Structure formats: structure tokens, C-alpha cells
Length: 417
Image (cartoon, rainbow, N blue to C red; front, side, top):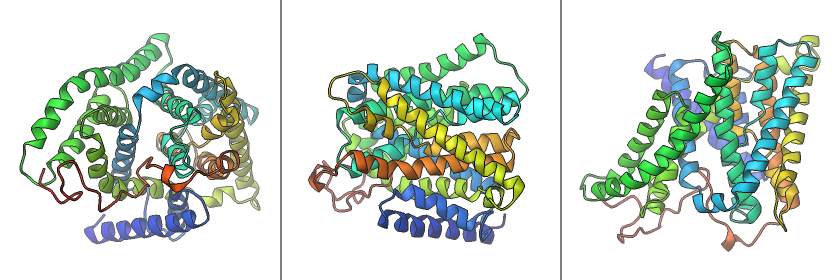
């Protein structure tokens, strides 16, 4: 790709993200949904202004999802999650088992191979932390008991989903499943997060104070971004996933004394790169494979509808696994529905490894988009919106106040840290 082609691709990506994100928000949907639809418009199904398979574009998308999980970690209240841990674990486990089994049996019923059936089930397991948090924030319910259960379960879903992804990835590469291999991947995934929280909590206060003494401009921003990239690299180096490392970095920095300032510093970078991921994954959707008038593509459309039904039903029923008086279990179930970024990670892996055909990729992508689309109106029906002064920021898509003043008294972003 030449520099000129790269600039044209970026222009198309940013224009699609902001234009369709704006349109989505104007009709009461999250901006992420508009970004994915914008990707469809400029991708292989539409104007073909970008090639989602291009290495450069792919790397930018990966950077976007790393920053997304980093920001989600920054926004996560560990103490609130621990308080709802019992219900979160129950909801997460049921919310993984039901969709996985449902997806697997859909594949087997349609005569697909064992590997493809397992992969379809695995693609239904994750829950989008970012999308759910944004909707709950917009409605002013981010810090309710139900929200703590949802967010805790969603985080566990993502970690366990990535364990499943690692196992399925090994199968795709020609390996075999063994108890020892699964135990090792599980230990690495959870062990890395635990170690990062323990060691990071001891080291980061010292590092943050050291960065604070630097006079170079935006030292705090670059220090935190470097820390996120380091954790992501370490996670990959020990056999886990990049996004687990990025999420762990966010959890660690969220416990420091300058957490609020770090969130503001990282916000702009996330706003720039995160939409690239959603546009690119939307750009890979080939709508021709879902054409109901074509006998071949009609099959993939029906598969997508079946996966969507299983995805929504499985997660909604999981909400009733929560224990505790006064919990609105229907709200918990609805909040677990969207698949979002991790669902697309599964779909992309399936496409690049050859497990999924272009048609099946579009079926899975259809499920991800449908579950993302249905969640906001469903939660709005179950949760009345609160007053605007009760609503707080939840994720990268929420605009940071430009005139906010930090602890040092300097306007946000203008001081020398």
C-alpha cells in the first residue's frame, strides 16, 4: 500500500466512523453500531475504499482494540466487581455454556464439521464490556447492583472466551485438545491478570510519581500508553492474548492516585484508533453472502438468524443465574446480550485461519451486529433513563470534557507532565 492509498483509506475510515456514528446516535443507538455499518458501506460490500485484509489496516485495527480494552480496564471498579463476584461468576458461566452449546448444535444440525461447530459455539460466548457499559452509562445506571453483576460477568466472559479462543486456535493449527493444554491456557489467562494486579499495584505508584517529575510534554500520556503496550506484549509473550494484557494494564492504572487524569489523557488516542477496529471489521462483511434471493447465500442468512436467536436467548437466560434480593434479572440478561469487539475477534480469527468461509464469517458478523443493535432498546425498555446529572462516563465513546481542570490546576492536556 502506497502512502497515498493509506491516506485515502484513513480518510474513508474516519469519515465513515464519524458520519455513521453520528447517525446512529441520532436514532438512539450506540456509535459503535454506526461505525460497523459505515465499514460495510466502504468495505467489500460497498464502495471498496478499504481492504480489511491489508496488513497496515489490520495492524491499525489491532491497535484500536488494544486501546479499547485498556480504556475498559481504566473504567472498571475492582471493588464493586468483587462485591458482586458470586452472581457475576454464575451469570458468566451460564452465559458461556448456553450459547456455546447452542452454537455447537446449530453447526452440527447443519452438517458442519466438528471444528466449525465448536468455533461457532465459541464465537457466541463473549460479552461486550464496552457496549454494555456505554448503554448503562447513557441511562444513568452504570453503578447499580445489576450493572456490577453485568460488568463483572462480561469481564469474566471475555477472559474465558479468550481461553476458548486460544484452544480453538490451537485446533485450527492442527493441534489437539488436552486437559493439560486447557489448564495451562486457563492458568496463564487468569494468572497473568492476577500477577499484573499484584505486581503492578506495587510498582505503578512509584512509576507514576517518577513520570510526574518529568518536564517533557504529555509524559503521563506516553508513560501510560507504553505501560499498556508493555503489558499487552508480555501477555502475548507468555501465551495469553494482547487484549488481556491491555485490560490488566487499565485495571492497574485505575487504582493509582492519578487515575482520573490518566483517563482524560488516554481518551483522545482511544477516540482516534478504536473506531478503526469497528469500521474495519464491518468492512470485512460481505453482504452478498447474505442475499435472501440467492439459494446459496440464503443458507448463510438463515445460519446468521439461528446464531442470533441462540446468542440472545442464551445470554438473556443467563441473567436468571444471578443470586441476590432485589436484582432485576431481566436487566442482567439484557446487558449480557451484545457481543461487540470480542465477537468480531473470534470472527476474524475464523476467517484468517480458514475455519470460517466468507459466508460463515458474514453469518457470525450478522449475529454480532444484531446483538449489538438489539441491546440498547431492550435496556431502555427495562431501565428508565435517569436525570442527566446522574450519568457518568463509561468508555471511549463518551466525550471527555475539554475544559476540565486537573489536580495541578492546569487545563486538561495543556500542562507539561
